[in-house]
Image (cartoon, rainbow, N blue to C red):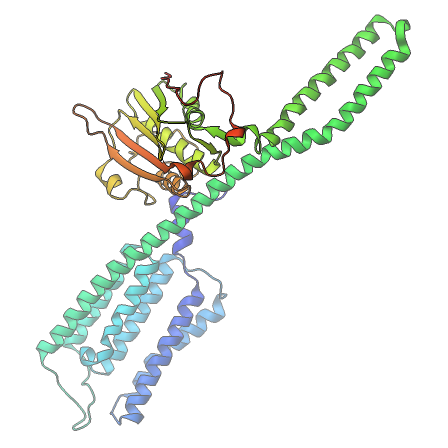
Length: 460
């Protein structure tokens, strides 16, 4: 069974390949070498050329050692990645120490390792790397070799300017680190939630395929059962009145059991045809009753009503929409104190479904971030009754909202506004022509002779 927990998804999303670090470091080595060679021979600046290339060579040696020791597909742990980025910061600080400290315009490259950490590592590692970068920048502001220049071989910039560069590095590290971490985290959460959604849909598809398998099995078993029935009849005919009572009773029992098996197989076969026939199109009130029926035995008073203007809308059965609506009803029952109300309403232009409970309602965080993954109102001590993939992780509402909106619906979340009432209110609304898309009146199921356009019932 795949790991569908939040931590499992996060581990897979965060761990980076060693090859990524090696390639980035080769790019940095190339840039550093070009800058040192260009300044020394192109501009004629007096750099400590040997020391500079010794520092650059340290990065090259580390890259070669990593490439030899580990395969390109190796994925680094958080600690290993943080250590490699810390080495890059220290190596850059050593190179800047030899070439003017914070007077060197390349000092802003302190931001690069912190930015990489923010996109790939947990916040505490990024914070540690940021503090390391700021600490080394502070040392370089006070202690460094002179910046080489044309006239006398050195230049000294005002300390106020150095302080400004240090402040820019500090603010840049903090801002880019927080911003990059936030954007990357939202991207990871969305990817993880979509992966969980795919698992849910895959399981639902697998369950729906069982009907087809059952029908296929019934078709294949029909032939041997028919053969048994023919042989049984032939034996009864051949034995005739000469057969002993015991043998005749056994043959009649075998015949009855074969008839029973054929009846069961006929029901299984009908499941496959129902998907494209009788059960493929349902009325709005039938759809609502399907959502409510599984919840009636959970001890919560469930009130269901259906009414509207004009003919009752019909729709083609959509497993994704049914799954999403069932998830919302499950949440309402879980959080309700004693009562859940489901109201189906329709007009000539709109079709809407409102689900209300008398529980504590949505928190302000959920209302502000409705539809985002990993937003949950469940407290740690509240049991999770659903065995759905991602249940209790804040994925249920995200999956439900995504599946329902894909059908063309609009979903809104709010809390009860009437005086003296509490609870959550979820309203799902479709344009009627979208809701009825692909449905035909000729496929409507009959409902005990009741006129579908006027039916209004409350079931508890």
